[in-house]
Image 1 (cartoon, rainbow, N blue to C red):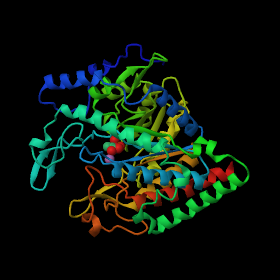
Image 2 (cartoon, rainbow, N blue to C red; image 1 turned 60 degrees about the horizontal axis):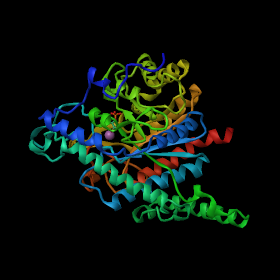
Image 3 (cartoon, protein in one colour; image 1 turned 180 degrees about the horizontal axis):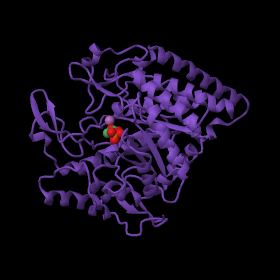
Image 4 (cartoon, rainbow, N blue to C red; image 1 turned 60 degrees about the vertical axis):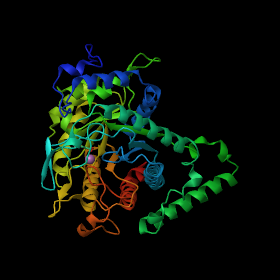
Length: 454
Ligand code: PEP
Ligand code: CO
């Protein structure tokens, strides 16, 4: 099939683009885009290649992908504690998985750019008003007023600057000592430490302390082992607003290839993955590792066509397929997709998003998800992958380091009546820190059989 010779960063413009905002004034959009084009890239192409190499290890069954973060980041919350607390729970989950499953874990955040949301309907009901839908802070504001919902192009620039500030702090934390393995106890936030999950985590942290002391006693110079002192945290977001992604797409001076330098990995959402559509056209031409969400309507033919468009060279690590089929349907819907892709020879990473197929509304109209459904979808995903002989490569979750009550259930269960206590998501309900840790422990258990066989 080969690469598309007619591709350019703007070639998507000739195709139908779903989910694009209705900007009220084209002139100010052009002004914002011109400014974006002149700004430096947020990530370096060489970093995206390193992530691609790490994902190739996942595709080969030698590592696991942890892809987690907010449903939608908020312009209003750019505080250091918030960024740090989300990083803490991610590091805790990665520790649990690495320790429990004895596998390298690729840490990929929905972070530093996750500001645009696809919506099922152009309007939404808030109280007794019918308003234009909130589309993420890159586009409009979530406040429940018609004026706030007007798309504002200056937000494209704000998204860039917010991403830069977040990425800067994350780089500082992950390379500057905060992610050092000797800090493993510090990542346990107080409200987590007192829960059963937090105590279980402490036991692992003590095991890591013992292992480090043992290695030091054996004469290993731990100071020199940089893997113990810093982590690679990669960024990603849904590549939804194509003019923004186009303006941050630059030719790599080392290879001459095009990279979308707004994040290390971009994913295509379930609503914008038509193989003939603008999003697939755009991402087919950039060399970043990519992901694509697959909802229950996805057919094997469509998914194989997507693989052909996005991974024509059959590169391991290039494409991650994230199934989000729902706990009740994954067992029937996933096997034909896995078989189709396997037989087509594309060495993809298979990951499971157990969040987006399991949304429900309480009788009071509050959006939530059940912890048990999330775990049920994950378990079925592992079963199907094993039965089909493919590696269950990763999990994709919406979480927050805060003590929110947005998803019901868990070890110290959140009940439907608790949803009003601390419900702060801008869009979909997220796992709180304790529930996230619980998922990590259970996934580590699901991963064990593979290690035992090896
Ligand atoms: C999301 O990940 O927030 C999302 C909207 O997912 P999907 O495209 O799978 O619906
Ligand atoms: Co979401």
